[in-house]
Length: 80
Image 1 (tube, rainbow, N blue to C red):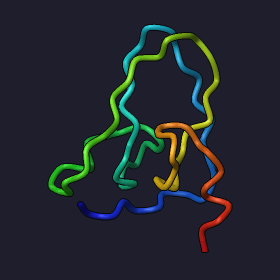
Image 2: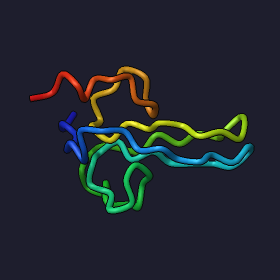
Image 3: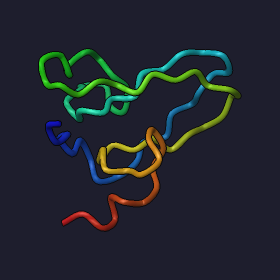
Image 4: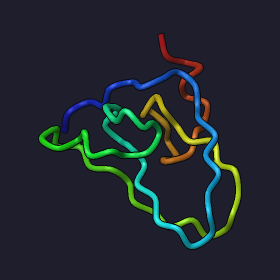
């Protein structure tokens, strides 16, 4: 599987709406980070689609190295 591009070495806060479907960019190429805009086409990497269970602010990963996608787990702090 191809390696994703690091979009940023910091998370992005996204205000999630309960019951709404989201697609988290897993490839790192989306211009609308951290959410997918379809830029992954042809990369072999697909977005992570999920439905927010509750309304809340969520810190979403932009380095694409998290162990808890789509949420940030601090992995970006260890990147060179």
